[in-house]
Length: 288
Image (cartoon, rainbow, N blue to C red; front, side, top):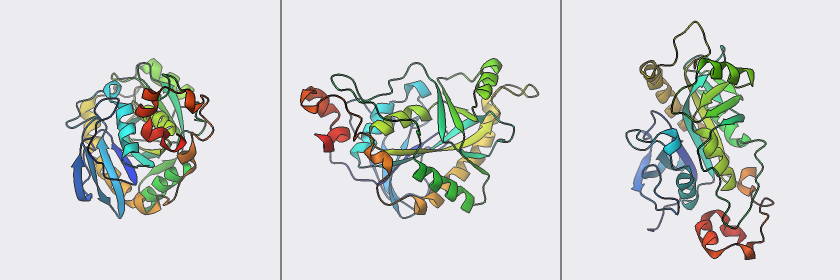
Protein backbone atom coordinates (compact mmCIF):
# COMPACT_ATOMS: atom_id res chain seq x y z
CA UNK A 1 0.00 0.00 0.00
CA UNK A 2 1.30 3.40 -0.89
CA UNK A 3 1.68 6.08 1.72
CA UNK A 4 -1.63 7.78 2.59
CA UNK A 5 -2.26 11.49 3.13
CA UNK A 6 -3.85 12.40 6.44
CA UNK A 7 -7.29 13.98 6.61
CA UNK A 8 -9.13 15.36 9.61
CA UNK A 9 -12.75 14.99 8.52
CA UNK A 10 -14.34 12.39 6.24
CA UNK A 11 -17.35 12.89 3.99
CA UNK A 12 -19.38 10.04 2.49
CA UNK A 13 -21.11 11.57 -0.52
CA UNK A 14 -24.57 10.11 -1.04
CA UNK A 15 -26.96 10.03 -3.99
CA UNK A 16 -26.22 12.98 -6.24
CA UNK A 17 -23.04 14.00 -4.40
CA UNK A 18 -20.17 12.40 -6.28
CA UNK A 19 -17.64 15.19 -5.82
CA UNK A 20 -17.09 18.42 -3.89
CA UNK A 21 -16.93 21.67 -5.83
CA UNK A 22 -15.32 23.59 -2.96
CA UNK A 23 -12.38 21.26 -2.35
CA UNK A 24 -8.96 22.88 -2.82
CA UNK A 25 -5.37 21.61 -2.97
CA UNK A 26 -6.89 18.32 -3.96
CA UNK A 27 -5.24 15.01 -4.71
CA UNK A 28 -6.85 11.70 -5.62
CA UNK A 29 -5.81 8.51 -3.89
CA UNK A 30 -6.76 4.86 -4.16
CA UNK A 31 -6.38 2.72 -1.06
CA UNK A 32 -6.20 -1.02 -0.73
CA UNK A 33 -7.89 -2.61 2.28
CA UNK A 34 -8.21 -6.11 3.75
CA UNK A 35 -11.88 -5.90 2.77
CA UNK A 36 -11.33 -5.15 -0.89
CA UNK A 37 -11.45 -1.84 -2.74
CA UNK A 38 -13.47 1.11 -1.39
CA UNK A 39 -16.39 2.44 -3.41
CA UNK A 40 -14.16 4.83 -5.40
CA UNK A 41 -10.97 6.85 -5.12
CA UNK A 42 -10.63 9.33 -2.27
CA UNK A 43 -10.43 13.06 -2.95
CA UNK A 44 -8.22 14.58 -0.26
CA UNK A 45 -7.99 18.32 0.11
CA UNK A 46 -9.15 21.40 2.01
CA UNK A 47 -12.82 22.39 2.35
CA UNK A 48 -13.58 25.71 4.01
CA UNK A 49 -10.37 25.58 6.02
CA UNK A 50 -10.53 21.93 7.14
CA UNK A 51 -8.61 18.93 5.80
CA UNK A 52 -11.13 16.52 4.29
CA UNK A 53 -11.23 13.07 2.68
CA UNK A 54 -14.22 12.69 0.35
CA UNK A 55 -15.59 9.37 -0.92
CA UNK A 56 -18.64 8.78 -3.14
CA UNK A 57 -20.30 5.89 -1.32
CA UNK A 58 -22.13 4.60 -4.41
CA UNK A 59 -19.02 4.87 -6.55
CA UNK A 60 -18.43 6.97 -9.63
CA UNK A 61 -21.52 7.14 -11.87
CA UNK A 62 -23.62 5.66 -9.03
CA UNK A 63 -22.83 2.03 -9.87
CA UNK A 64 -23.29 0.40 -6.43
CA UNK A 65 -26.58 -0.68 -4.88
CA UNK A 66 -26.95 0.10 -1.16
CA UNK A 67 -26.31 -3.57 -0.37
CA UNK A 68 -23.24 -3.65 -2.65
CA UNK A 69 -21.43 -0.74 -1.02
CA UNK A 70 -18.16 -2.02 0.53
CA UNK A 71 -18.91 -0.43 3.89
CA UNK A 72 -16.07 -2.09 5.77
CA UNK A 73 -13.51 -1.11 3.15
CA UNK A 74 -14.81 2.48 3.12
CA UNK A 75 -14.63 2.93 6.90
CA UNK A 76 -11.30 1.09 7.25
CA UNK A 77 -9.79 3.34 4.59
CA UNK A 78 -11.10 6.47 6.30
CA UNK A 79 -9.47 5.31 9.52
CA UNK A 80 -6.22 4.61 7.67
CA UNK A 81 -6.26 8.21 6.41
CA UNK A 82 -6.43 9.47 9.97
CA UNK A 83 -10.10 10.51 9.84
CA UNK A 84 -11.78 10.73 13.28
CA UNK A 85 -15.00 12.50 12.28
CA UNK A 86 -17.34 11.72 9.38
CA UNK A 87 -20.21 13.76 7.93
CA UNK A 88 -22.57 11.75 5.79
CA UNK A 89 -25.11 13.47 3.50
CA UNK A 90 -27.78 11.16 2.09
CA UNK A 91 -31.12 11.23 0.29
CA UNK A 92 -34.12 9.98 2.28
CA UNK A 93 -37.88 9.64 2.08
CA UNK A 94 -40.10 11.38 4.61
CA UNK A 95 -42.42 9.50 6.97
CA UNK A 96 -43.92 12.70 8.42
CA UNK A 97 -46.27 15.29 6.94
CA UNK A 98 -44.24 18.07 8.55
CA UNK A 99 -41.06 16.96 6.75
CA UNK A 100 -41.77 17.77 3.08
CA UNK A 101 -39.31 17.35 0.21
CA UNK A 102 -36.29 19.71 0.39
CA UNK A 103 -36.31 19.60 4.19
CA UNK A 104 -33.04 18.72 5.92
CA UNK A 105 -33.04 16.34 8.88
CA UNK A 106 -30.15 15.66 11.23
CA UNK A 107 -31.32 12.42 12.90
CA UNK A 108 -30.37 11.18 16.35
CA UNK A 109 -31.71 7.60 16.25
CA UNK A 110 -32.07 4.56 13.97
CA UNK A 111 -34.39 1.64 13.33
CA UNK A 112 -32.62 -1.23 11.53
CA UNK A 113 -34.43 -3.06 8.72
CA UNK A 114 -31.34 -4.31 6.84
CA UNK A 115 -30.82 -8.02 6.25
CA UNK A 116 -27.81 -8.85 4.06
CA UNK A 117 -24.88 -6.72 5.21
CA UNK A 118 -21.65 -7.40 7.08
CA UNK A 119 -21.82 -4.70 9.74
CA UNK A 120 -19.00 -5.45 12.20
CA UNK A 121 -15.21 -5.50 12.07
CA UNK A 122 -15.09 -8.03 14.90
CA UNK A 123 -15.15 -11.81 14.96
CA UNK A 124 -12.37 -14.13 13.74
CA UNK A 125 -10.90 -14.41 17.22
CA UNK A 126 -11.83 -11.08 18.79
CA UNK A 127 -15.07 -9.99 20.45
CA UNK A 128 -16.07 -6.39 21.11
CA UNK A 129 -19.43 -4.83 22.01
CA UNK A 130 -19.52 -1.07 21.44
CA UNK A 131 -22.32 1.07 22.80
CA UNK A 132 -24.79 2.24 20.15
CA UNK A 133 -27.49 3.68 22.40
CA UNK A 134 -26.78 7.09 20.93
CA UNK A 135 -25.62 6.13 17.42
CA UNK A 136 -24.76 9.63 16.21
CA UNK A 137 -22.11 12.00 17.51
CA UNK A 138 -23.89 14.85 19.27
CA UNK A 139 -20.96 17.18 18.60
CA UNK A 140 -21.16 16.55 14.85
CA UNK A 141 -24.96 16.66 14.82
CA UNK A 142 -24.99 20.10 16.35
CA UNK A 143 -22.33 21.27 13.91
CA UNK A 144 -24.58 20.23 11.00
CA UNK A 145 -27.66 21.84 12.53
CA UNK A 146 -25.75 25.07 13.14
CA UNK A 147 -24.40 25.03 9.59
CA UNK A 148 -27.87 24.58 8.08
CA UNK A 149 -29.45 27.25 10.27
CA UNK A 150 -26.72 29.73 9.35
CA UNK A 151 -27.97 29.44 5.76
CA UNK A 152 -31.64 29.80 6.77
CA UNK A 153 -32.42 26.35 5.39
CA UNK A 154 -35.31 24.26 6.78
CA UNK A 155 -33.71 21.72 9.13
CA UNK A 156 -35.05 19.42 11.83
CA UNK A 157 -32.77 18.72 14.78
CA UNK A 158 -33.30 15.06 15.67
CA UNK A 159 -35.47 12.24 14.38
CA UNK A 160 -35.39 8.52 13.72
CA UNK A 161 -33.86 7.19 10.50
CA UNK A 162 -35.32 3.85 9.34
CA UNK A 163 -32.58 2.01 7.44
CA UNK A 164 -34.10 -0.50 5.01
CA UNK A 165 -32.32 -3.00 2.79
CA UNK A 166 -33.56 -1.86 -0.60
CA UNK A 167 -32.95 -1.46 -3.46
CA UNK A 168 -36.74 -1.46 -3.91
CA UNK A 169 -38.69 1.29 -2.17
CA UNK A 170 -41.22 0.48 0.56
CA UNK A 171 -44.65 -1.05 0.08
CA UNK A 172 -47.45 1.14 1.41
CA UNK A 173 -47.99 -1.30 4.29
CA UNK A 174 -44.31 -1.15 5.23
CA UNK A 175 -44.25 2.64 5.02
CA UNK A 176 -47.25 2.93 7.34
CA UNK A 177 -45.66 0.44 9.73
CA UNK A 178 -42.43 2.43 9.87
CA UNK A 179 -44.47 5.51 10.75
CA UNK A 180 -46.22 3.61 13.56
CA UNK A 181 -42.82 2.58 14.95
CA UNK A 182 -41.76 6.22 15.23
CA UNK A 183 -39.71 6.60 12.07
CA UNK A 184 -39.23 10.10 10.67
CA UNK A 185 -37.18 9.45 7.53
CA UNK A 186 -36.20 6.33 5.59
CA UNK A 187 -33.04 5.50 3.68
CA UNK A 188 -30.81 2.57 2.74
CA UNK A 189 -27.24 3.32 3.79
CA UNK A 190 -26.54 5.35 6.91
CA UNK A 191 -26.92 2.84 9.73
CA UNK A 192 -24.36 0.39 8.35
CA UNK A 193 -21.83 3.22 8.19
CA UNK A 194 -22.69 4.36 11.71
CA UNK A 195 -22.21 0.87 13.19
CA UNK A 196 -18.79 0.45 11.61
CA UNK A 197 -17.68 3.98 12.43
CA UNK A 198 -18.48 3.43 16.10
CA UNK A 199 -16.35 0.27 16.09
CA UNK A 200 -13.56 2.17 14.34
CA UNK A 201 -13.75 4.98 16.93
CA UNK A 202 -14.86 7.50 14.32
CA UNK A 203 -17.52 10.06 15.28
CA UNK A 204 -20.36 10.04 12.74
CA UNK A 205 -23.38 12.17 11.86
CA UNK A 206 -25.78 12.23 8.92
CA UNK A 207 -27.31 15.10 6.98
CA UNK A 208 -30.54 13.72 5.50
CA UNK A 209 -32.08 15.42 2.47
CA UNK A 210 -35.78 14.66 2.00
CA UNK A 211 -36.67 13.88 -1.62
CA UNK A 212 -40.20 12.40 -1.31
CA UNK A 213 -42.96 11.20 1.03
CA UNK A 214 -42.18 7.47 0.67
CA UNK A 215 -45.36 5.40 0.08
CA UNK A 216 -47.54 6.06 3.15
CA UNK A 217 -49.52 8.97 1.69
CA UNK A 218 -52.64 7.50 0.08
CA UNK A 219 -53.29 10.74 -1.82
CA UNK A 220 -50.03 10.44 -3.78
CA UNK A 221 -48.49 8.02 -6.22
CA UNK A 222 -45.80 5.69 -4.89
CA UNK A 223 -42.19 6.83 -5.11
CA UNK A 224 -40.93 7.37 -8.68
CA UNK A 225 -37.22 7.89 -9.33
CA UNK A 226 -37.76 10.52 -12.04
CA UNK A 227 -39.64 12.74 -9.59
CA UNK A 228 -37.01 12.23 -6.90
CA UNK A 229 -34.26 13.37 -9.26
CA UNK A 230 -35.86 16.78 -9.72
CA UNK A 231 -35.90 17.43 -5.97
CA UNK A 232 -32.48 15.86 -5.62
CA UNK A 233 -30.84 18.55 -7.73
CA UNK A 234 -31.93 21.27 -5.29
CA UNK A 235 -31.04 19.13 -2.29
CA UNK A 236 -27.53 18.46 -3.55
CA UNK A 237 -26.78 22.16 -3.85
CA UNK A 238 -28.13 22.76 -0.35
CA UNK A 239 -26.04 19.89 1.04
CA UNK A 240 -22.84 21.28 -0.51
CA UNK A 241 -23.54 24.64 1.12
CA UNK A 242 -24.30 23.08 4.49
CA UNK A 243 -21.12 21.00 4.48
CA UNK A 244 -19.02 24.11 3.94
CA UNK A 245 -20.98 26.12 6.54
CA UNK A 246 -20.57 23.22 9.00
CA UNK A 247 -16.77 23.07 8.85
CA UNK A 248 -16.08 25.97 11.27
CA UNK A 249 -18.36 24.29 13.84
CA UNK A 250 -16.82 20.80 13.75
CA UNK A 251 -14.96 20.41 17.07
CA UNK A 252 -11.19 20.56 16.70
CA UNK A 253 -10.39 18.08 19.45
CA UNK A 254 -11.45 14.49 20.16
CA UNK A 255 -15.09 13.53 20.64
CA UNK A 256 -16.46 10.83 22.99
CA UNK A 257 -16.93 8.43 20.06
CA UNK A 258 -13.17 8.47 19.46
CA UNK A 259 -12.77 6.28 22.57
CA UNK A 260 -15.61 3.84 21.95
CA UNK A 261 -13.39 0.73 22.15
CA UNK A 262 -11.77 1.67 25.46
CA UNK A 263 -14.04 -0.66 27.45
CA UNK A 264 -15.64 -2.68 24.63
CA UNK A 265 -13.06 -5.38 23.82
CA UNK A 266 -13.69 -8.62 25.72
CA UNK A 267 -11.00 -10.85 24.24
CA UNK A 268 -7.52 -10.54 25.79
CA UNK A 269 -5.46 -9.02 23.01
CA UNK A 270 -2.62 -11.48 23.47
CA UNK A 271 -5.14 -14.22 22.54
CA UNK A 272 -6.22 -12.57 19.29
CA UNK A 273 -4.86 -14.29 16.14
CA UNK A 274 -2.03 -12.36 14.51
CA UNK A 275 -3.80 -12.19 11.16
CA UNK A 276 -6.79 -10.58 12.85
CA UNK A 277 -4.54 -8.04 14.57
CA UNK A 278 -2.94 -7.17 11.25
CA UNK A 279 -6.30 -6.77 9.50
CA UNK A 280 -7.60 -4.51 12.27
CA UNK A 281 -4.33 -2.61 12.64
CA UNK A 282 -5.70 0.91 11.97
CA UNK A 283 -8.66 0.25 14.30
CA UNK A 284 -6.88 -1.51 17.18
CA UNK A 285 -3.50 0.14 16.79
CA UNK A 286 -3.44 2.13 20.02
CA UNK A 287 -4.63 -0.89 22.03
CA UNK A 288 -2.03 -3.35 20.74
